[in-house]
Length: 74
Image 1 (spheres, rainbow, N blue to C red):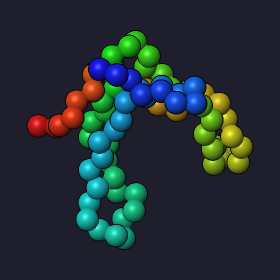
Image 2 (tube, rainbow, N blue to C red):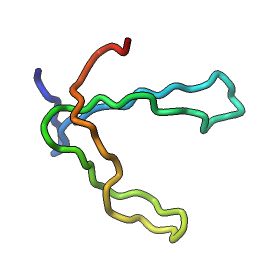
Image 3 (cartoon, one colour):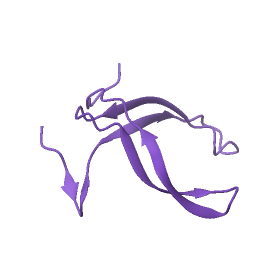
């Protein structure tokens, strides 16, 4: 499998979300599965906004699973 890489970033995986069909609940999405490249990289680091301090902080922004990439969910 060829792994996508551009501008110093390498594809690591993606999440599948289930979202209710209700426009009034924009935050109702629930992550139901994570597909992650098997490469022993599980923690993705970067900057995220901290609403308590109002600042950007650097740290782990996602924890992967090394589950492998699939193109369907049964």
